[in-house]
Length: 437
Image 1 (cartoon, one colour):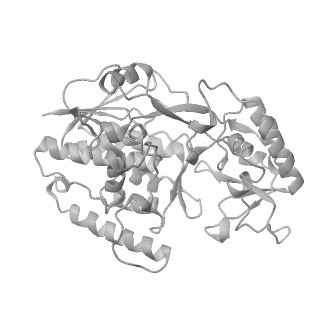
Image 2 (image 1 turned 90 degrees about the vertical axis):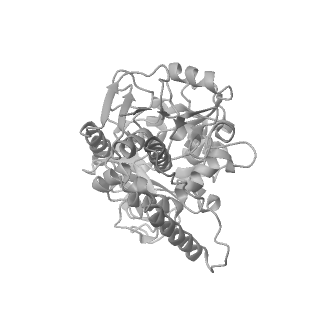
Image 3 (image 1 turned 30 degrees about the vertical axis):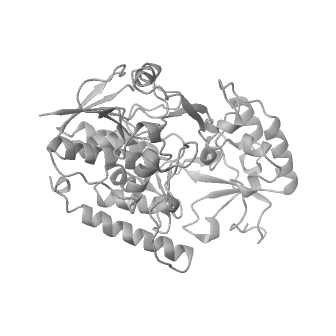
């Protein structure tokens, strides 16, 4: 029996290993935790979520909602765990992070076709290999990849939001509601007056940042920008970003507030909440001082402060093909954020594609060849050459999926029609032999 080595058990590596193993292929899954941790990881479990517990919107008029439905229909372990460990979050799919990771770890550990090796991979073995070490790849593996890919020197920075205990939130200064009344009042909203907001922004701009070697604002990926960077971009930037009051009516006043900080449930018990959109790389002391200026958080207990860490990704359009394989050595594939897909769901989707296509190749079956009409295929096409200009990380969006070719009135209706077409395509692809093994 041929063995496929998967290096890294994040969301991409875990999904990839599962897709291979369920088709009867022996997988050697190498994960360096708990022997060695990255700056952003704390748990020894696989598929650890560190940036946010939300896997984003679930509606099929939303591109990430479509991507998740494609993955569900194709037997995704990540989506199975997400549904099992779901917590309330309005129209978003959010999970109990610990339960989510534990479920995936146990599934993989109990799969007979998966051999788990807890060690740091410092070299690339012979045979079929999938490198899913993530944006925080260890120096040893990064150096090994550099020897294969001279262009491997791009990076951006990512940040993790703080978490507070529910009992420490002053609910006399906060209220529960979801934006536009969508969902069952799943968010805790912390309002601020104009004066409070102005003082907060001033302190945020001046607050001391933790040292991050080589950091500059231009390197921050827009989808996960630190709040202090946003504050420096303009007085009202936060009010049009994570602190926007639109769609929220304060029950105490019957009006919209000047600015609102939202807290989202972070565990199944509902005892921990994260500050939505408050990724930061301020020092921990400054985070406590400045974020306590939010009235509802004046006595907040921070169980985790925000941290800033480097994310690294490949110049994929020049290095990878549409199967995420290294063009110069086709036995080596990459999956996850290292390829330039941005987001937890996108990372898992890339791992799914690599797992399915590698299985087809190892078993001598017809390739699936996910087309750009599908969200999974559109991501692969973007990463392997569908970008224009300098390559940057990309979340799934309808803009990279093949247009309909005919007019549909209304954006939501058009998006729904794109999703309908995509799911029809996925259902047809499921007839291929690799999905029947």
